[in-house]
Length: 81
Image 1 (cartoon, rainbow, N blue to C red):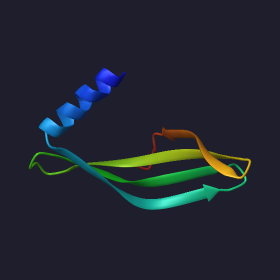
Image 2: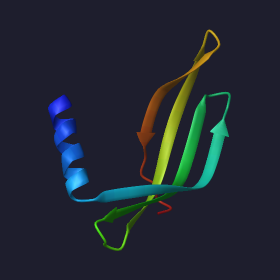
Image 3: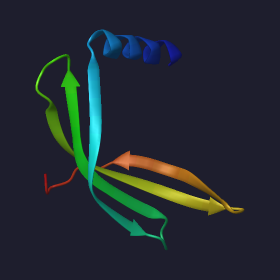
C-alpha cells in the first residue's frame, strides 16, 4: 500500500493536480454522532479549467472516555446533484 500511495503522490505532483473543497451546507445529528457535509470539489490539472463535482460526505463520530473519535468517513451519492 505504501508503494501505491507513493506512486499516486508522484503522479499528482508531476501532473500539477490541485483541488479545493467549498462547503455549502452542514447538518448535524448529535444524538447519532452523525455529521453530513455537502459542497463543491474543484480540481485543476495543470493550467486547465477546473473540474467541478458536487460532493456529499458523512462522518460518524464516537465519544469514548471524554475523547471524540472519527468512527467512519464516507461519501454518498446525492440525487440532488
